[in-house]
Length: 110
Image (cartoon, rainbow, N blue to C red; front, top):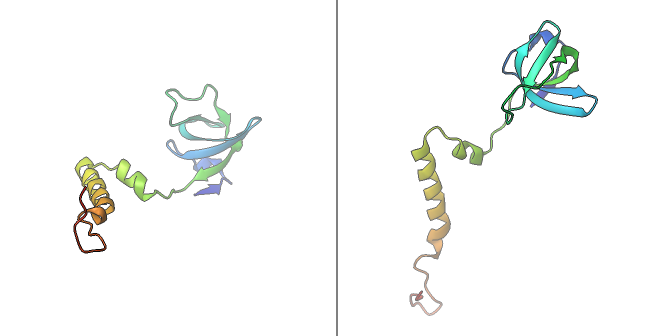
């Protein structure tokens, strides 16, 4: 979820912003604030962007995000809990096929 930026002075280091330049729009994290500029870095990049951009190039500011249940499991800080949850889901998917009975009431051989 984003909101437009009316006053770029409210930005802080760590904020995720969308910037408009000659090439279009891109979204990066603020790593340095100057009096008139903002230096950003993409989360997948090892180093900050080469040049700072003017504060008025910031057109949107991320104010929150919605995580999917899958991303919550994958990025869980409790790996054992995540593994147990995934194992439970797997059992729930496979269990209905265990011990199937034929139409004549006899167990199906596998």
